[in-house]
Figure (cartoon, rainbow, N blue to C red):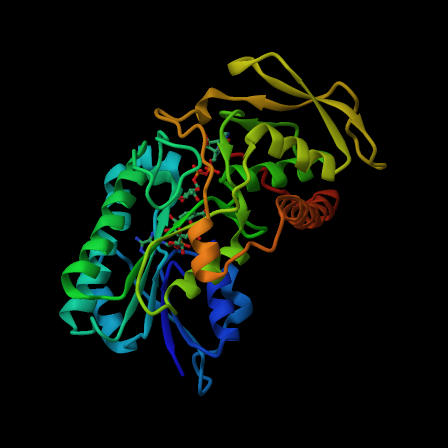
Length: 370
Ligand code: NDP
Ligand code: GDR
């Protein structure tokens, strides 16, 4: 039985990957951080009681900023495959916490690789690094492939640039089977609530039910290549099953703007949006609603641009070219953009309905609007 170690197991990708590897028969170990409240919601359905025998899913306390901890876990687990997904992964937050972001995202990757080397596991342990389309930043060519030059535009992207190159360097210097997956944005119903897609689907569902008045957004014209996280974790595994380690772009090859995302998510809820104004003054009004039992009215403003969400340096447009992954690994994404948006909207509508029941019964429901 193969053993995998996932850093960032409590995150979106970590949860999907853990499930995927367990279904493949792996023994899966994950690193979770200590928090003042339990923070394992995304993997609770996989939880196995620590008192049970023959557990296949085992969590270890740890943090990528702590070398001794990382080395101890690597030594104890002796993984065949390491998936390094842990990161301060929010681009805007990285402008507020640049040093912490670098410590986790850049040096954290070095700590994992150095741990493998120090423990003499270079020939045993395969390593996957969660690289990102943010490396392309101010894009130098469209679409972006494995050969497109990088131009990072945030502390997050700069940290990930170091992580990308240190992964390449340890592969070349020490012969470690190490790969970078250069993944474009991928989303799901368990996406963090402050990334734009989930922020939109969650807010619109709540607005429909009268739990929230307005969705505040930044740059509506940013364009992204959005796929489904479930499709993308399969690629992370596939990259480690080849004869030779290589780096791959994972993307759909299809692009939408934030504005289009709002329109499509709203349409899935039966709301048509009419845009007014432009730039910092832009507003989205209800042009029509064909859903019964909603307090929404035609002409009501439900989207507003708030400059607080503008970034000091923005990545305006990203579009991936996944030809290498398609031809060498036979990978094709199975979940379409429309299906992704629909799934996210449906799940957020369901949780908004639960919140509405609580609100109607007099309980306070937090309208978290970040
Ligand atoms: P999430 O933000 O959902 O998850 C990040 C995970 O990292 C969480 O488990 C988090 O723990 C953990 N983590 C954060 N800091 C530390 C630390 N110092 N030590 C240990 N663990 C830490 O990210 P995603 O699942 O979306 O992304 C996974 C990886 O892929 C990240 O590295 C991200 O940068 C990268 N990526 C993501 C893309 C996407 O579109 N989703 C695209 C390209 C790359 P906790 O739950 O306690 O916060
Ligand atoms: P991104 O994702 O920065 O691409 O990083 P995010 O969803 O945060 O932003 C996408 C685009 O939407 C614009 N935007 C807003 N973004 C947020 N978060 N909130 C808003 O209100 C808002 N309004 C407009 C942003 O300016 C941006 O252009 C994600 C993360 O998962 C990274 O870890 C990963 O590496 C990249 O995707 C690929």
